[in-house]
Amino acid sequence: MGTLQRQHSRAERTRDYTAALDLARGQVAAMGALVLAREARPTTAGKPLELQFAATEVDGRALPAAVWVALRRGSVDAALDAMCAVSTTHFLIEEREEIGAGYRLQTVEETRPLPEVDLLLAQLAAMLDIPVDVLAVLADWGGEDPRLEAEIDELLASRFGPATRASQPPPPLAAMADAATERPQELGRLEMTVAQAAAVLRLDQDQARTLATLVDCAVVTLTS
Image 1 (tube, rainbow, N blue to C red):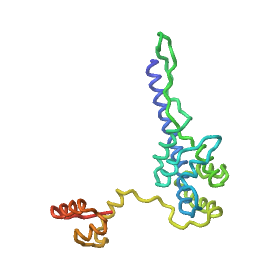
Image 2: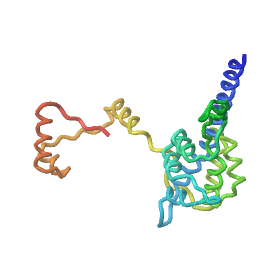
Image 3: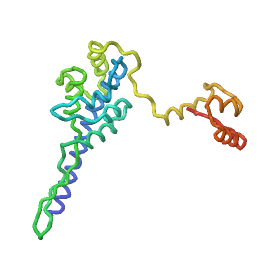
């Protein structure tokens, strides 16, 4: 009975952990929209934005630049992984007694890291000069809330000016390749000799000979 209860309790705690991650995912997604909107605006000379983010400490701590880069690329899960890797907050899954050295009972805890969303909000607030309680409201809305885009645009426009490019993450390379394959009629056609290609690509003699061999053996098509 005790074992069944422990298994049931562990399953419940695991579900609670998953729910906590899902909540954090929505909050981080909202901050991802903020990061993309900031990237769409001009920056002053100096450190790149991801380095500015990493250098903004809150009580002596700061999330790494990888979090900013992941959000800039639209990868919320990658940002969560980077946050969990440096997290000091852990979620208790199970606590049990085991026999350790000297045949003494010792308590063993199974824990999993939780992304510190509060640190992310505080770090972005300090970097972008936006009150942290305002960012907390946006985070609670989540990344899919229709109010989010307009509110972020208003907050950043008053601080960094209007956006100069679209605040959307670049598509993955695989998606770009698929799009090129699906729409070949929209692509232009370019033909050139091996010598011309070697000149354009600045190939040395060995590389040019390799290209010539490839062209002799098959039709070579280059895609994005």
